[in-house]
Structure formats: C-alpha cells, structure tokens
Amino acid sequence: MLKIVWLGLLLVPLVTHGAEGDAPAKVYRWVGKDGVSHFSSTPPPGVQAKEMELQEPNMVIHQDNRTQLLNQSDRIGERLATQQAQRDTLQQQIEEASVALDEARRTLATGKEPLPEEVRPIIGRGIRLTEEYYKRRENEARQVTELEQQVNALYEQLHALR
Image 1 (cartoon, rainbow, N blue to C red):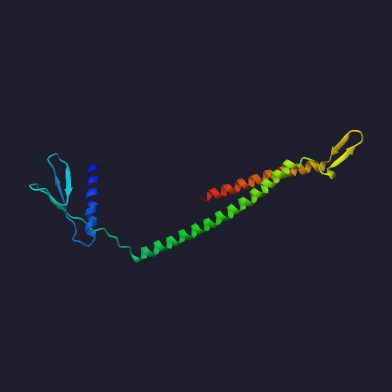
Image 2: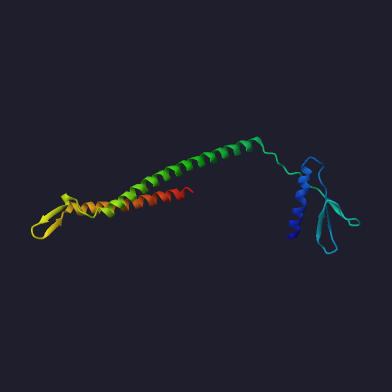
C-alpha cells in the first residue's frame, strides 16, 4: 500500500508537468536490492530501470455531458431557491405565531380577575363566578396550547428543510 502512495506522489507532479505543454515526462521503475519498487524521473546509474508508459488524462467533456451537467446545475439552483423561499415563509409564520403565543400567555396570566359580567353576587356570602368565566379561562388556556403546538410544528417543518 505504501508503494502505491509513493507512486501516486511521484506521478502527480510528473503528469502535471507533462500536461503543461512540454514533452511528456518519463518515469522509470526499478526494483532495489531490498526488493522494493522505486520510481523516478531519472534512473540511477548502473541499475536496470524500465521506462513506464504514462497515459495523458482525458479531460474532454463532451457537449452532451456538458449540457446535461448545466441542466442538472440549473435544477439544483431552482430547488435551492425554492427551499430558501419555503424557509423564509416558515420563518415569517414562526415569528407571527410566536407573537400571538406571547400575547395569549400574557392574557392567560393576567386574565384571572373575572370581568363584571362574569360575577353573580350571592346575598350575604360574597360572589359567585359564572360559567362564562370558566369557559373564557379554558379557551385562553386552549389557545396557548394550540399556539405552542403550531410553533413547534412550524419549527419541525423548518428543520426538515435544512
């Protein structure tokens, strides 16, 4: 494995140098006394080195492939733009729902005092809260819960787009 890595490290500059318009670079291979293969652009003196044939890399992109790549790039760009628009819309909805949620929570926290029409006096015993008071408080609590669920669902949709 190490031999292959060294070969790659030696051949990349040689192939690159050859691709710059000069004559193709020559690479020589020989096996040392220790049995290890060696590669170089110049063989050492007195060693039987074998010249290797290097092939030029094919960097031509055919017109069909180019058109296909450009079309694919356009589709990806359109998909990214659509996702960004969806993220922006969801972010706006989250902000609006969060404002409504904050207001509903404030109403729930401050609305404990009954409204005048929600109180019935009891002679000699104080007051009695009407059914409307309990329904109003229940509706306020339900509204907070629904808005919390809506905000959470919007966040989940937003995270699914990322």
